Image (cartoon, rainbow, N blue to C red; front, side, top):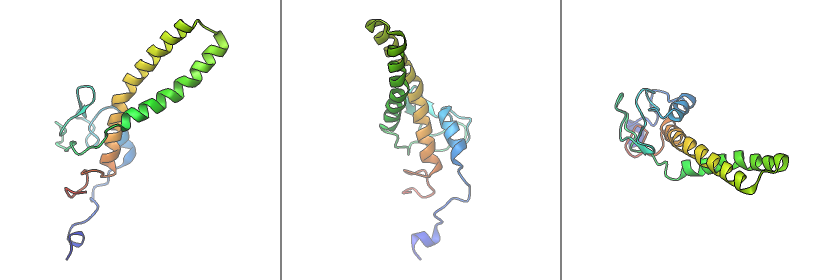
Length: 135
């Protein structure tokens, strides 16, 4: 018998995607939803302090930063154009306003998107979140 014949490839416990993503967005453990996912601003805990789910397997890397840039750019670029055409503010006022909005929105989204990306990996059993250590 091979390893795949003796060890099931799927866990009998289902991992629904939507609740996991919502828990990750709230920066909570994707498994139980009670424990904090992050230690500090962006550092993912090695394990959930409530349920013990190992979280060190994640490979979020630059994904949350790319998603943050994508979302902030797509939200603020049209708003920038609209503001310029509608009210024609002074360039310095507009630059300061949109710089503050860009930084604030980026700081808000970055940890939430990281939590959602870790939860996505957990729900799909990616990068070691599966049953076997090499899944």
